[in-house]
Length: 139
Image 1 (cartoon, rainbow, N blue to C red):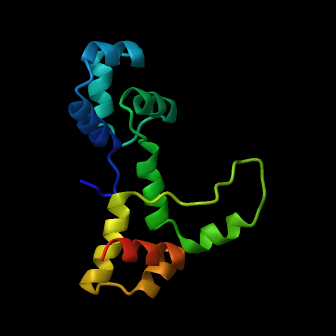
Image 2 (cartoon, rainbow, N blue to C red):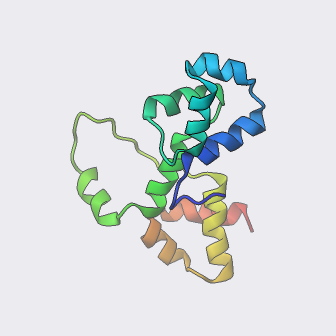
């Protein structure tokens, strides 16, 4: 289900609720909502960020990372270059966050011959040393 291109966050939330087996009454109290509200969240393709933050806390899972993975994989390179040089009031982060699934995705493309290491470095802007560390750790 790791489709970082077309994210249906409600489905990820529903799956996490099932995995953690969080008591429904506890969820309702913590989220300050009704059971119907929770069902609506499960069916929603997008969720308000404050609601997502609360869900991340109670379900002990960073749902925002799903969107971060989308940005790493699909954000246009030109847009990132222009905005990264400007210093502003919004916090700047030094490193990208790569999940195990993403690392496996990149390594599988190399192993299958779908892309070369140079193509992955250029297409996804992954630092050369980072990619080669992954390759060394996953022969």
